[in-house]
Length: 220
Image (tube, rainbow, N blue to C red; front, top):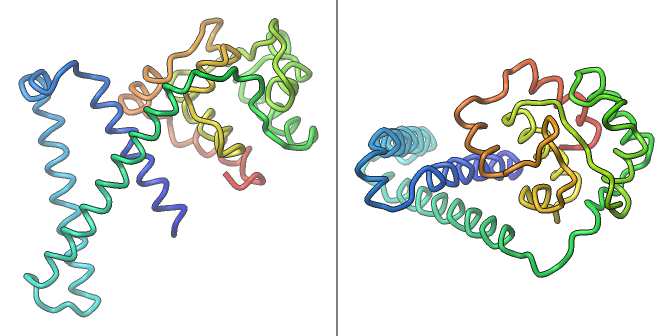
């Protein structure tokens, strides 16, 4: 249950980051992004309705008595999302130390399993990213000349990096960008661009299932 709630908060924070990245000011948001506002209002109204009905079914028979509980739950949810967004902003700004490794403490056999899955899906190729380079970047200290070049769309790569982030809770998505070790089709990545595209064009269900199956044994 906690993991599900954490994922919901993470997705809402992604949506919040996406909305913020689309505008330069509140006025711009109000003037040109009316659809986003309407979407948020509809989402909150729908959530309020569902929570109210759930509380009603649980025994709070008065609709008016259930509303304060719903408002409290919504306030807690919004506070959690804002906290997650602020945490990400802090993580993005923390450039005071040099990132030397992703420090994914997994056995070589398990990383080989992930690597092979990526090869089978044509996300990686042995020519551009041999396993030795893949293993070294994710588990050892960086070498200046080593990079991993993913053959994936921006939404697909964002989903993949989220999976790797789950293998080391100390990592943040901006760390992958700041390291300079992750490329997409030969070019460096921009995390905000990945998040934006992820919500505009989410990965297809069959791709998500393939990636989930690769990481299934790792608990992410």
